[in-house]
Amino acid sequence: MPKDFTIRPIDSKADRKTFIDLPFRLYADDPNWVPPLKGEALGLVTPAKNGWFSHAKAQLYLAERAGKVVGRISAHIDTLALEMPAAQGFGPGVGQFGLLDAEDGEIAAALIETAEGWLRAQGMTRVLGPISMSIWEEPGLLIEGYDHPPTIMMGHAKPEYRGWIEGAGYLPVKQLMTYDLDITQEFPPIVRRIISSGEKNPRIVIREVNKNRFDEEAAIILAILNDAWSDNWGFVPLTPPEIKDVGVKLKPIVFNDLIRIAEVDGRPVAFMITLPDLNEAIAPFKGKLFPFNVIKLLWWLRAPKVRTMRVPLMGVVKELQSSRLASQLAFMMIEYIRRAAITKYAATRGEIGWVLDDNQGMRSIAETINSKINKVYQVYEKTL
Image (cartoon, rainbow, N blue to C red; front, side, top):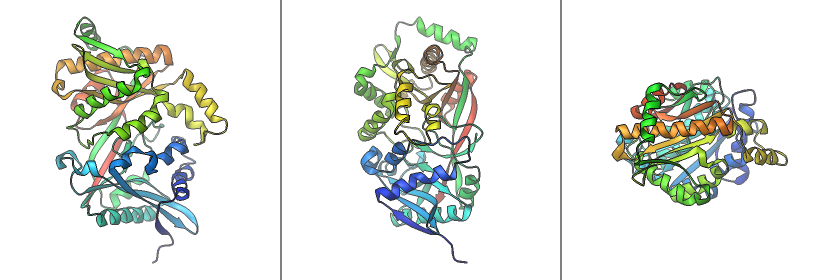
């Protein structure tokens, strides 16, 4: 039976706007979906506004039925990912799909098949997904934790998407988890003793970042990050164009006391980034800033009060990983930021992640401070 919908590639600004508008209709009745700011969502798929495109290319597709958009998907190739060791997830011949949304399973299957066709035509032999669009943005499909909203820069999806992707022949390859933490409670005695011991060590300094030296501080964090994460599954080095664009986006929610750099003997060796959950502020905006929501947002940014703080990134240089010092530095940074989050920002909850399922060091730290898994995201793979 012929399909009653069509799928077409898109590239125009008007079509990209249509592309980002679709989830606003499909998730309109989902109380746990947080509408992204449309300008930010448009920037993600616009090459001139996303530094990731400096080493990647993508093709966007729309599915339409009777003049109505009923699905979307992206197919993309990251040239840096192609250079990574195959044992770390990417590697030669590996493309990705992402930004999948559809009205029903038939449309989803056709969109996935279309994305696979584009990747195959580009010489790809394997596909990972969903990854939207960089591994540093929103990787994986939500498979657990539909009952509460995602925090800033985390994805959301309908439960049926899992069956649609698996029905298209995809197999799980990696899980990414977030951990929920009641930050109003003090940490267990053993953690407090570790922190106290670190505070007595004159070699250790846990300092706040200085937003007035944003570029310099970002360079320090980037150097640690690219070293600390270089052996992780799915690692692709962050590049200066990406850092520049991320800096523009995140700088308004960067606060000195929520981002820490750990120094040992004067050398930066670890960092922890914490962000107030911007989703709490923008959820009522329905994706629009103008004309009045921009004023509300600017007012909120002056002194944000939030329930949740998200820790999107932590890192310790490789030479210290698996050492007692690495855990000590992590606990110290977490504790100092916990105190600031409570006293200055009125936060009561923290969310750590995402954390790779095989990152035993980070999982151990999260569990030791009594945090619990609250969301699980799955990355799938398929041979083309």
